[in-house]
Amino acid sequence: MLPTSVSKGRSSSSASRTNPMFPQYLRRIIKWQQMDIEYTFWQMLHLCTSPKVVYQHTKYHKQTKNQWARDDPAFVVICSLLLSVATIAYCAAYDHSATHAIFVVISVLLFHFLITGAMLATFCWFLTNSYLREDSPNSHVVEQRVEWLYAFDVHCNSFFPMFVMLYVIHYFLSPLLMVHGFIPVLLSNLLFMAAASYYHYLNFLGYDVLPFLERTTFFLYPIGVFIVLSPILILSGFNPSRYFMNMYFSRRL
Image (tube, rainbow, N blue to C red; front, side, top):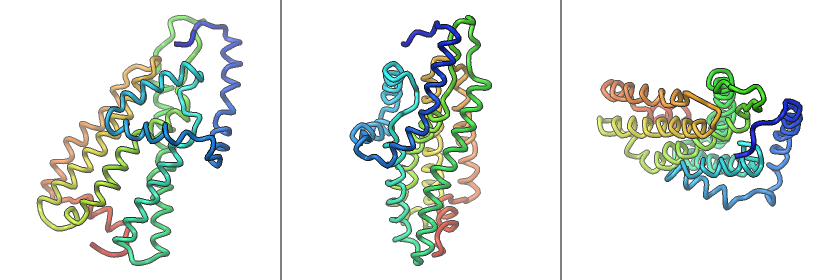
């Protein structure tokens, strides 16, 4: 780990150096040659199979570059492209209006991923920095805070497996999930519960890896809500697949 016992003057100068991180991050979005595409796909694979390995590499990134957040926007760019392709596939199968399909693609990309992600990242960034940081016993220890960009990274990491379940797997299962009956209701609720629970589990891992946070099990609490809520929705006959598909597509299912 990097040394933490430094003067306050050095701490303030270090903070000033990290301020340009976000503009540099945005500038790199249009520079494909600077993105590590291979490493991004490696991360995506392991987020679905062994996410703790990904956050172990986050520790190495902190040690080498002195920041928790990625400095490479490749993950956001590739995830946005995959999300757009998946949404286009849904529109081709379930929509009959090209204009409406364009609207659906843009709204899903913006609201499902980017805007909602920014809002969740801001909430988690505020929550962790305001209530979950450990009190420093030494006044000479540098105050560590969760970077907003890291909170957005955690959202992106958590979103990708949910994307695989609710956009890719769901797409191939949709002919079964769209029909009426108890089995489609059961499978649809279980799929949505698993996706939402895994999202919050990865959220927990993302903040639990930060050594200056405590009580990070708070991020696991929503999983209990989903476990309690799912049987109620199943018994009531609510099918989330039919609900969201009818909400987005002009062809009623």
